[in-house]
Length: 332
Image 1 (cartoon, rainbow, N blue to C red):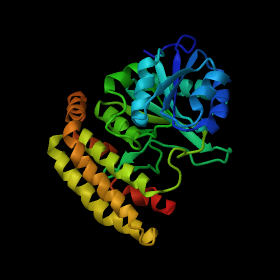
Image 2: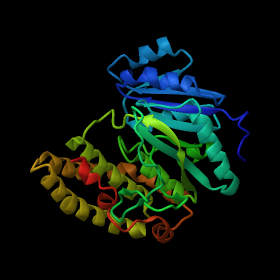
Image 3: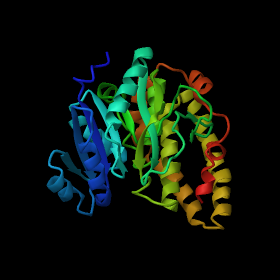
């Protein structure tokens, strides 16, 4: 049952890495929220700047958890295990939100829950940090190569939503296993959304609810390291979520596409920068080197699923490559 807004504690989990310059604006905006009760949990992943001391000094109401840097997903999971709320909201440090943001998001979740008890996670739209309007965020699908693809139509729900913000029941988050800690950076949201879909839950967006996001503060631009993380984490998503019948086929499909199409595209758009090729092969090599250690998590995912791969593909696969649908090549 969806709790009454006057009784449901929302735990806001902010994950940070060297983001001190964003914290005053982020925490001030969270302090001003009209929705109550809220608790704010700040998980710092081994920052080298003054983030922890700044937060403890200027925002004493925030619960601070200082941790080593084990990746974004691990930090979110740590925050969720310390949370007391019935609902959790994951945010990056490089955001600020309007005073009614949590209230609007909670109400949107409640309205959807009234008609769909299988709601899994909810996201919202986001504009640039300085307030420039961006297109509404809609739930997405997966392409045949394992990459998330936006949906251009008006479908109400789909399989995938971006992880900032990521709002859902804390009980369901813990039941699902949370974010996969085998992924250090990027695609944690894809993996968890995919898993929730396999468990029979629907991912939604509240496009009218908006926050302000700097975006990619921890790894700005489009360096080869970012390609490494995307290649590696996409392989982890495929490994976790496809059944054994389909796993080999989609792994091979991803490898062929990544090695030939994506690598060629990166070489062309980067004017021959071979560091992108090295990043691709490093990501692939590291995935296969670590794959045996990922088997326990994969086994848990497969035990929880109620949706077959055929059903998932028919509902949630976008058959055009994400690279073309999202036009992400333009970032180069």
